[in-house]
Length: 470
Image (cartoon, rainbow, N blue to C red; front, side, top):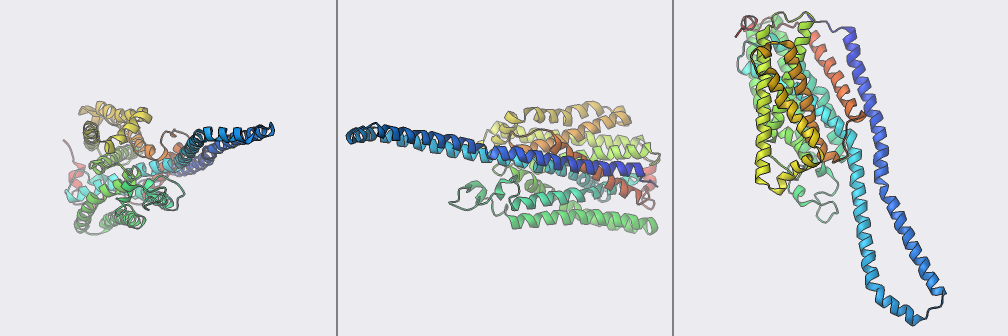
């Protein structure tokens, strides 16, 4: 049985605490930047006020020099239109400057929340992908993976903390604490309001606070329900009828896979695609699922090899590692297929409502956009393309690291452009959430691993798993 050592616990807790501190410090520093941006228009207004005062002084001086009324009237008649047009132009320029400054201030203020949100979505995928894969093992009556089920169960519990953070961030949007979601802006659905947007108003049947909250609660309840029940029956089988518990879990897994088939797409629309409210893609749900799924395999590989290095999982051999490597390789290719399909169809069709999504990423996020493509496809494929490479722990670990870094960047590129625009970067507010969730992930997963035997001893296909070869 695995023992969660004190030093490892301390490391996980330290990562969580340090990550939280870094984010809070970054949040405070970022707040001063957004404050400066929001008040940048005050300087412009002061300058215009000074110019107006100078004009008034000049007019007073002009009166003092004794020009007759006829001359003044003629001058007024001649210059009235030009002066009115100039004043109107100055007013429009001032209003536009104010609107731009306010928008920039909102984008800068969004950055800490967006960085926390990116990390939460990414780490949610590490657990959610394996929860779905765990369900598939029961539905497909898979035998090779029986010796790895406890690791999948442990990863599944890692969804709780990210889900709580995601729910808090989205609900704070309703209170206008941040402006990450454009459809949550006050007056966006109210005709005649200065913030009214006809396109977003047309989607208010789906994107409204009440229905959105209901969907979030359904996701949280359904996913955590499946994780808890699959784990509960798995543990009961250790001291009871393994076949009966396996059959019960098979029924639960069947229901969950159907539920997840729907919610994997709708949650992607709600949590990510609704940030770019004007844009839509029919492939986006599958695209997001593929990224989460392959990332979860990378995390499972690292967890498996870590436990093997600690002297556990003696029943896991190179054939199991080979299969995990195959899944990671296959879904890296699948993710790339979806990425290319979504990109090339939108780019080729050249519909303004759709292509603007990629134009912003090409113009403002070119480096992270293409870097994540290399990390998510080219490097993993080159690393584990051959059969022997999938059986070498060092090579598979290297590919897993590429995948994890690449898919964090993928979520970064999906979320940041719509929330912070060109006011992005990588600093304390980005590093902090990564460390925070990494610490929580390590603590939750290894705690779950330590609370039960690593071997699902009464699983009806355990013998097949122990003798698995190909």
